[in-house]
Length: 407
Image (cartoon, rainbow, N blue to C red):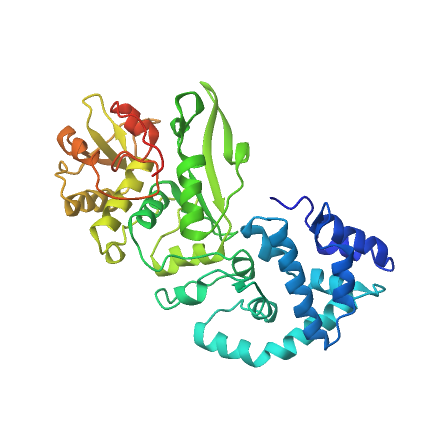
């Protein structure tokens, strides 16, 4: 289930001097029909004997058990373990919430100060915090509260920097690039760009990627699935990922996701060499061949590129075009390494601007129908809707191949 009410700092602090109202906020958010954080469980926490730190651990375990009982989505559970929430659960009195919270924060800091300095030295995580180390001590029936893999990922990627939010949401980074990871990276390279001001990744598809009547919803089905599988990241669903834009032909609907993760942002930029695409200025993207070690990784990355950039011409050939000559040559090289035979990379001016031609020509190449038929065959056992490497529904419908089910 999704939490019906999220408890935030402002809501808790507005109940200062009124513990009954504060408890009503907690019970309203974390209980349902006699399950979860009940009044009895709250009393057990507040009468628990021990130091403030030990009482906070007991409170955290009670909250963890409550959220598991309520079947709250795992992606939402860890985010509830803020110092504010724990202070509200632990303390009977609630005269000055800010003081209660800071006293608990200091108790957590004192317990984890030495461990924090050690881990910062070992992992070089700038935003690692005392509360995060506290959360890592919480278990319920042998299952840890923190299930992210950022510590393990540091062994493979040396430059990314996770935020506190990345730890709170149990974000993961791949420690091996295989087919699924390759597909998502290919989509990032085809459809994505990094913003400078908000440290997030934006991926945006074409209007043709969203046609519910024809069963085409690549972002809602495929991309959301991959974000969850690769990063444990759950973008908001429904119409909220559909962007409207008014054109001469009417209103266009384009699917897009905003990935607000500093870990993903810095991993792409600093570990994989993914470059900015500032508004109004083109920046070349280069394919990271050095991480695409296996054939499945190469096929996955190529499948993601096809899903985002690939088009079919009137002869039934697959073609790619882009302003960056280096990027197009990289794509052609990748297709060659997989075993296909792309045409020569060529340039062409296709659009007049004022009195002259396009300043930056489009670079392009094609792949023959014979090679396309080979793309439709696969021996990969993957949990994706796919028809070989043509994983975008509008592509396999273009070649009259019915969509397969998720296997």
